[in-house]
Image: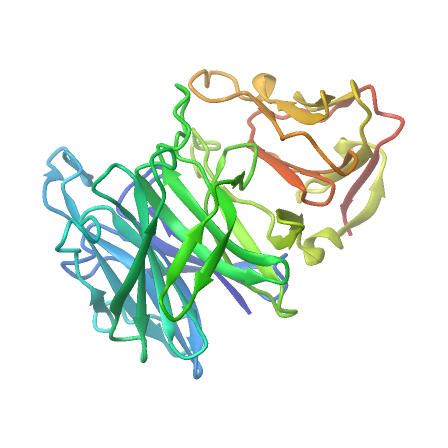
Length: 413
């Protein structure tokens, strides 16, 4: 089974003291919610169980996460703190079946708050990603450096319990001040680093924190990572954040990311996850394509969006220069060799957020597969050469524009 854990505040559709929600799937398509997996019980995670990673070893699940303790809780709202005064520790908990966790007796602090500013930040060090190397276990943490630049910390362990700092990596200014949710993996086409630098895109709009990816060189023995000067946005819609990846049953690298949403839907819930995406590197370019399990579900032809079931629908087409498509108020068009989108008509009252988006110049033709949900649209260009994913509100049922004769529309069988 596939296990998807996510930060979750169970008391209201807003940010707060984080727990871990949990969903399980056998096929990455159909998901069953399992309730709360982790919740605060210790001094070190009193104010939240934040992001991390999980792995299986010898029939047990090992979960690593960041625990937060507020030094100065807000007396008017205990689910927030004053002046960023908190400490972060890295904790581990295990489970025999991947479902039940002993939150009261099963937690262990494996890395206490960083004590040396030369290594990392006691407040802003978090999101452990753990993987098995050739001869040991490795952990990567995101942190903030003294020079206003984010950094990565690399640890090694022989037993998953005792961890030793091995090395660090950073870039000069321009890549944000704190690197959240780092992920590292190897594909046939190259080694990939994905991370979410805070303060990366300061253009006066919300979501200055973005997710970027790049090919890197990494030497396991020394944990020496050389970061590229060139990068890609994970998603050119700029709403996705904090992705993590795993391997599927076929050995493919599969990534899922969180869709940030400025307001709750029907006042009940906020935040979604994108379609699971297979990550591949071809000729130095990182592709994010729809996982085949999902793609193979959308095969039932329909005549209009109104005929789709609650799982939404997929629109496939080839777009020529100057052509446009309107999906319920969400505009997609091709201009100057780029695929562009505009959500102004379906994002009312959100002037602080970006409305227009564009890919870089597209290299391989202009085939689009657009997956449409009530509150999320994902535009895949050339099977993952670029992707634009956006949160939307009040999406209509009509599809218009220049291309209505060329469209193929599918819903799930």
